[in-house]
Image 1 (spheres, rainbow, N blue to C red):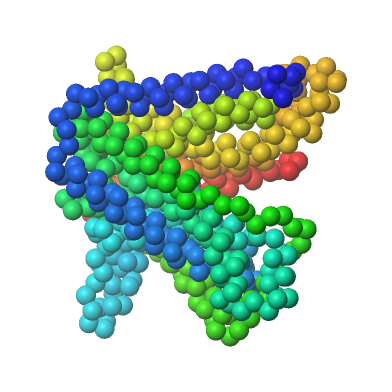
Image 2: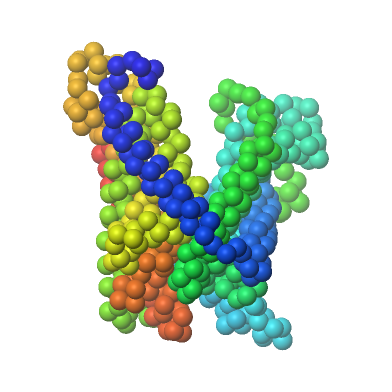
Length: 517
């Protein structure tokens, strides 16, 4: 297909892919080169490695373990508000991590709602800092993702399987053994790997809820080596080690996730005959209610605590909000400039470009930031380029998700209209502007909204480059928390929540307005 005449030129896609590959591989090469000059890892560094693997493993196991009964309950039950609840499961993905942490502190912190309730019965307050706090935050952020992944797998089982099981009179143990367990055996390894990788490279959670000698992650070790000790060799060595751990986890997941699938069906609507007992209905209801409460309480706490301090926010917070919007806008433009030509090229059969689109998953923002600092430092002052570098890295981190949104639709457009465009002798430009882009509006809006929300809420590479006079809104909130200005921090968190969700909604809605979907 790639050798035939195509309605869309693959040149810009190859150019964008080449630039991204050079950026990622170049920074990783710089990290590897610098690591060779380091003096090795200390006992504290190895302790950080062990803590990172421990917290990521526990977070993945607990998130996926709790997601299984929640996804099973959602797969078996139909109730008013089910679609809204499933949609709510996507909110933590665009929720800024610093906002989620403040919400968790309001509910589970030493002075939080639950600790106050426990105090009335004479119990000690909950200790949220350290390993258990890091795991709690990761479960809050990743339980919805794991639930969506497992629920999607459940929905891919043909309805005929459940119909046949009902006709054969399968009881609950037989249903689990013959249908549900084979499904989970295929879906769980991938879900574990995704959550493990996210928790492995999580920075903001460890920065705010960890940080002690016994609760330092590799990411936090990179940050400390960079910002406080300026030991680039140690930071680079830790970065390379993190990449190796993430790669090994991905390879294990791929090997464990092999399966034969469940075959195809007649696309009938899914009906479940199991779980009609009172015990099953009660159990499913309890799991759904607990999951909803776990998600809604911290979000409600952010609104409740943020409203009093919102009106009196200091000027520095509004200035940081403007910086975040500026960086996120630049990041979103860079994202679309790279993702659209790459998606168009992939749609014409250039599948090798897809590899470049996934390179952003090979390393965390701090790893890329460390490499960029090493490359920029000999020729310019990296701290003067804090905002452009942050926008570039944020675009790179959002690219894999944007590609997942854009590529399927781009393939459909090329398949449906490509031959017609060639038969009308349309050049690449007219086909792009008159056919391709108008029919991609909904997907472009969704990808732009997702990239904008993720960039606004990011607390990653900006911590490496920022100076005291410049900050994005997440970084400013973190600084307010560090100076114990909790009311201003809560108001800033509410502002950040409104900006993230609001920009996502506006761009997604704008893309779907009068669009052909």
